[in-house]
Length: 225
Image (cartoon, rainbow, N blue to C red; front, side):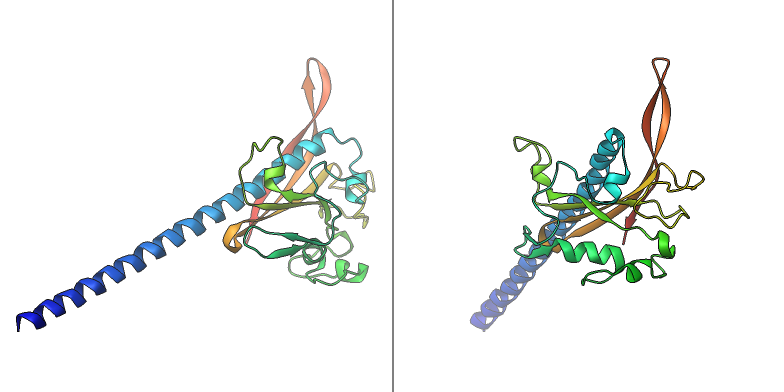
């Protein structure tokens, strides 16, 4: 009888120990995934801030909108695959097509101008241009950023314009979105985490030492779910 009781106690302790291990492992995974997701969100926001500084120093925004000028933060051509920290790969051209027209295949003008719930502006739909992309750790020199996140940032004309010229900032002098650009950033982190941020910024004139200077103002910021 004592042997049976001892065996039952051992089985009970083993079950409790196993349950405790499972709980600890689950909590660790949840904590890790939360940290990876938060890191990706911070990375996407950092991408918007980085590009905003580029826009501040760019005199010709049309060159950004038509893709003839890119940021210094790139890791090659805006196409092909890139390895991610979780062992998967990312196809830059496919991701760009997805944000442009919701398809992984090449986007036609008709598909980019199509009116949808997410892109209701027709001919003024944003024609997202890949402007900056690469591992976040390469954004600053000498390993100043320790991150396992891959970042892509696109720029586009503000869809509030009604000129039907998505490659020109304020193709008409009366365009309501003249001097306004849209920025979209995707950050891909470990464990399949991904966060997306979109913002619009406006060029403004600010006084500086009695002379007119230029600055940027954030008009909107949102996380894309």
